[in-house]
Length: 367
Image 1 (cartoon, rainbow, N blue to C red):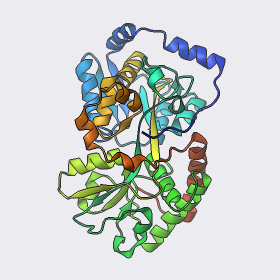
Image 2 (cartoon, rainbow, N blue to C red):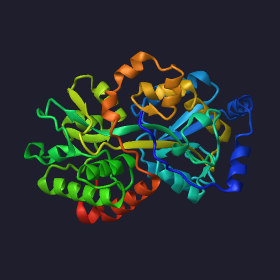
Image 3 (spheres, one colour):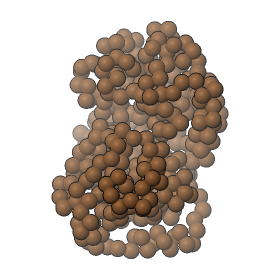
């Protein structure tokens, strides 16, 4: 699979000591303490995203003593961090214990003091380039940007970003949400900008914004957050989304309407999401146990079954523990060969430029 670029740098001695202390408990001790806490609060985990529905059920089946409280399943990465900020002194059900956010949100959360360090027992098999050396955040899965198309409405499926400018796609294309607050929308703009010749960073933002502005001016851009319902209704017949979401939505639609998933021919962008534990987690041991489950072979295969490439994919493949039927469900490996993994610095520059320029260049709010 694709090799990750280096995403992290520098560690502090104090942070390393804190992370080491955070990981000092044995799994048996964590499990006992988590069962005593009796609850875990997650946030922004749609059941059709990356196979999370089955993953959550797997955790509940393994640890029936721990009740899982799910907050705001359709929330964005920004919503997750805001929930931590808003509930710093709250030990009730509105305070999230764990986070699953876009890569760029991990370092931001660490800098703001919103997350705490913890190194799972499978830490060494997570690529160094996809984790914070201090243990504050770590990659969980990745995918590439794709289009999902309602082929009952769209007869000629677009093969690349540039195709979306064609008049036949009037009122057809949508993002999954506002790129200023959600990582999936933000990275869709980067993919478009890369397809227009922009290098990841401020350049991809400039060219991506220009492209989205042109789409909007042409009447092809729909300022509605695309999802299975809007695709089925025909309100957003073409949506840019991570491949694992698009493939899961296609399965959910089950031919009503017919849907096809395409990885654009250019601007092939890979995106890593990361896990973290809230610094104010009311159930810190349950949070650690959740992380241990997610990064176990069982948890990683749960994500793969949901069309995501788990972060420990190479380790799983090397040990030959991936069922052949799971691999067969994924798009051809060739579709991922040109995938680009932007660095944290490139993502930060892109995010800053998109946030600053969206209103002036595109001029619509995606809701």
